[in-house]
Image (cartoon, rainbow, N blue to C red; front, top):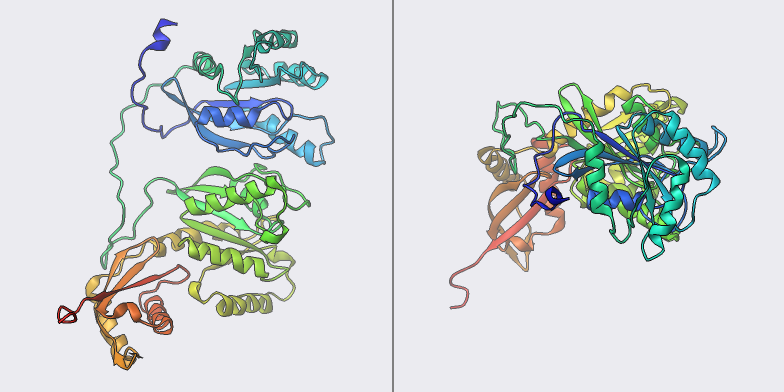
Length: 479
């Protein structure tokens, strides 16, 4: 134990190769998600005092004794028919266990050992994976005594802890580190200096993402977001089915496509606020919005057979307010009868109700059959490139002078505004500032005129454009 009290060195950089996989498994409501959050060091998985909150596998990175591991939280193991929802959840959990380098099998020490614990403990033993038995909820004086009942499962000595209160978690991390496979030796990789922004001049190659390109899949319930995720990954990673609202938490998965790496996040369906009354759904919506804020590109999935709903427009407006690039994904395209009329109707509705994102790229596909699914990631990459666009200052001001000559700034309180020059202050999204005398009084309709000109002249379709104004002070005004 003496070496365990030594001060830890600074954490190593995140590895670029494969990390050992640690899977948390057990029946529902034994505290798996609480333990997951405790090990990753933040509230990443949804936690509620309700059995079966976790449905899809949730992945995170945990630093265990100076070594990073890929930690997977799974749905509760339950006996159910394969075609039922609980049967599909169990299949997903079993798939994760079979790929694990170490399984943390959790039981509830306060509830004691149940027949379900015994059944799945026998199944775990047959998988021939290293297992560490966890007796969770062992806080208090009777906790350790209750944890000893887990010996009967035949999985070795149980480790008593309380994930909610943090008791025994340090010992658990050392036990995990001792049972992980040996760490392979890697050559030191050169450090990559991260850049805060991109400045691309004419003739240069477009920027490339530093790290994975973060993508959030958003939309209304039952639009096919999880089916789309499975189609992109080529495996049944997410729980899908005819039931609406299957996805509760935001699930992030890394995908390699050619030279690009994407971190794709599947989110819960977003309904109208008036229809959200359960606390669990409120947490799901909050997680979806947080995933959108962390993303660089949002893929808004629509059911093409239903057209554009008002809630779809509300989600699109949320994407615009957060300043994210957007790709409109029309799913279930194989079920559309008149495709030309449907596409035109959707684009007309967007042009009228969502003028601030004019020109948003549209991709049509069928996530269920996989038809045309290959078009989505290139569209995401193109949207990200536009989102990072930089306009040279010289070309920008030449354009600005032409726009002022074409339509002079309006009169405000009987005096004409004097706009002097414009500059781009940042990208992601493209943000411009106009300087001039009383420029802060520029009417909104003239701002829209300039924004539309920026979008058309410099080829900035489908991304939010921020236009700010800064007035110059008259030094003789006081005198």
